[in-house]
Length: 149
Image 1 (cartoon, helix red, strand yellow):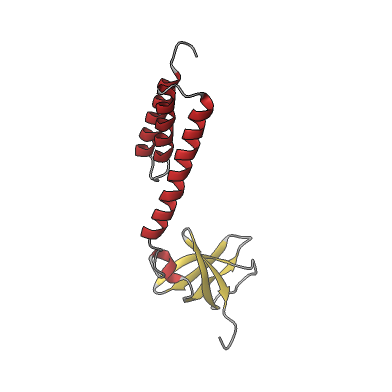
Image 2 (tube, rainbow, N blue to C red):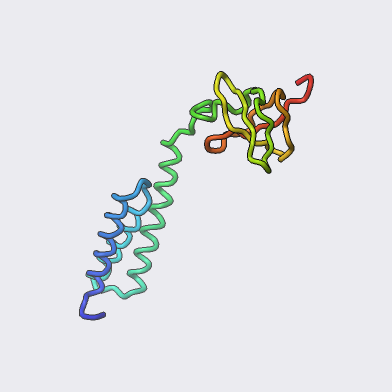
């Protein structure tokens, strides 16, 4: 292939995957680099393209599956109430009527004012007590609290 040995292509590909892993935040591309290295070894040993691809796919696939299982065991879920999620379920007071179509609405929640939108799209008048459904960027998604709740 243009005077370049196939094993060299596999090893260059392996190096690119490994360098790519160093430049990204995840821990995923490394396994394809190791798989390409295994395919390169097969090419050096004189095995045909089918064996090289099989080594690449099987090595990469097995390492991805093993690493996912390991990552799931050692990674802990974020506890509830961290960051902006701590506002979910809290009660606030509408200061400015919430109208999704006009892109208006402000809510006071724990001494802070937030931009807000209705989860149903209905207009929520001022002085209505609302419950936070979720935090979407820099604004709250709320629903009105019915009397007696």
